[in-house]
Length: 240
Image (cartoon, rainbow, N blue to C red):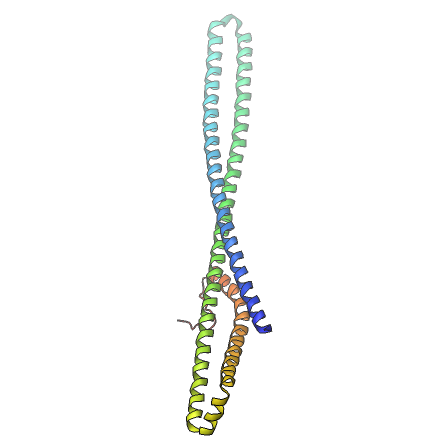
């Protein structure tokens, strides 16, 4: 009973591990989707910033043209007030230059924001790749645990069947060779069946003790396989 409880606990732990891996895989996929949405929003912001820069450059060009036109008009129409006109024109040019400097400063700020946004996009791409890699690792570990559990069950069933067949065959041979032994076995048939069941239980216990330490190594091998690209094999598998 203690061995069965230990095996049942190990099976429940594997099932819980599978559930946790499934949840982590789903969370990683949701994170990747959120990052994709954030990337799209940042791209839209970049487009808006570029449009604003183009509009600012147009306004700058118009302001310079207006300043030059005003300067020419003032000189031609107010020839007798050349000095005053020059001062007024210079003031307008100075104002236009100040506006130009302000626009340039705004443009530099916009360029800095653009660089920052592009860096954020690159960071998001990197984080997205990491999230996808985590999702792939979780999915690979899940498949490895499921495959190991299935193979373990098949091996246990096969070994138990082989052990039962071998014991029954040995019992039949012994019975045919010894009539006295046959009479004893016939009088006490439950003992043979009890020995068969006991042997099967011992085989199951040994197989499960072998399985439990192997499962802890599955995740590390799958993680190394994803990172390094080198193949790994489950317990009992031979390299191809």
